[in-house]
Length: 426
Image 1 (cartoon, one colour):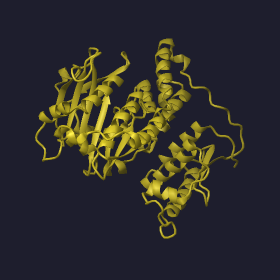
Image 2 (cartoon, rainbow, N blue to C red; image 1 turned 60 degrees about the vertical axis):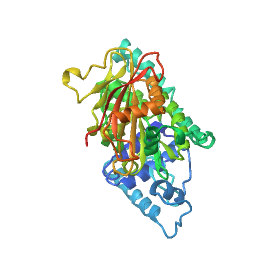
Image 3 (spheres, helix red, strand yellow; image 1 turned 30 degrees about the vertical axis):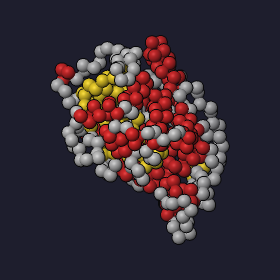
Image 4 (cartoon, rainbow, N blue to C red; image 1 turned 90 degrees about the vertical axis):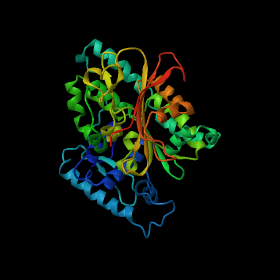
C-alpha cells in the first residue's frame, strides 16, 4: 500500500461510508472519534494530533487533564484501529483507499491498496441528458450555493471576535417578556449551541426531490445513495458529491449570527457555533441550542417535528419554500402558497434531555429571516407572542410555535405580523 495523492472528495466519501458501517456506527464515541480525527486532517490540514487535544474535543476532558492516569483516548484509539482493520478486511474489502490510524499520532492517513494513477475529478456539471431547461435552473442554484462556501468559517470567526468587542445589550432595561425569552435560550452558566444549516445537503434534496432522514444524516448513510439517487434524477454523480460535501451555510443564517452574538453578549451567555454535519444527539440532549434552517438544510429539526404542526414545502416551479400548517383542515393547509409575502417560523421547545431549551428559526428567504430576527429583539413583539399563549411558571417563557408573515418591501414593526401562535403538542 502506498500514500499518494487522493482527492479530498474521495476521502470524505470514504469517511462517511466507514462512519456509517456496522463496525463504527454502533458506538457513538468511536464514530465521534473517527469523524473528529478525519475532519482535522481533511478540513484543517493537520498532520499531528495529540492525545490531550482529542480528550478535550471528543471526550469532554478539561484542559490540561492528566493523560497518564486517564487513558480514555488510548483505549478508544486502539478500538478504532481494530474496527478500521475489520471494516477494510470485510465490508470494505473492495475499497481502493483505506484509512489507518498510526500509533503515537492520532492523525489518520489515507492509503491506496496498490499504486495506481489517480485521475483528477471532473469539474462538477449537470448531466446533459437532463435537458437545457433543467440544466439552466439547477446550474445557477448550484453556483450560488458554491459561492457561499466560505460563509460558515468567516461567520464563526466573526462571532468569536464580536463576543469580545460588542458592548453588552441593555437587556436589563427591556420589557420582561423579552428578557424572559432570551434568558431561556442564553441561560447564565449554560452553553448555547448555534447550529448552522447545511446548505449543500438541502440543495441536494431539492435537486433530487428526496428526503434525508435525521438518522441517515447523522450516520452518513445518505452518502451511499448518492450515485443511485443522482442517476434516477438525471444529476451528474460528481456534481451531487461536490454539492453534498461542501461545508456551507446560507447567507441569511450567517448574517443572523451578528444579531445572536450581540444578544448573547448582553446576557453573558456562552455560545459555540456548529455546522449541522458536526452536531450530535449528545449535545442536543444536554445543551441549549438554536437551529437555523429548515428540515432539509438542518435535519436536526426533525427531532422536534412531532411536536410541531408547521412545515416547509418546496415548490419546484417557483424555486422556493412556503409554509404548510399540517394541523389545519386539509383544504386550508396550502393557503400560504400564493402571494409574494415572506414567512418565518419560530419555535421554542425543551431540548431532548428536558434540561434546556431549543429555538428553531427558519424562513422562506433571507429578508424574512432578518425581519424575524428584528421581531424577536422588540419587547412589544415578544410580549405579543406571550399574550397568545397559556401562562407559564413565573420567570419562564412558554414553549410555542409561531408563523410570521413579512409583507413584501415592508419593515419592522409594521410589515411583520403573527399569523399563527400556539403551544406545541407534548
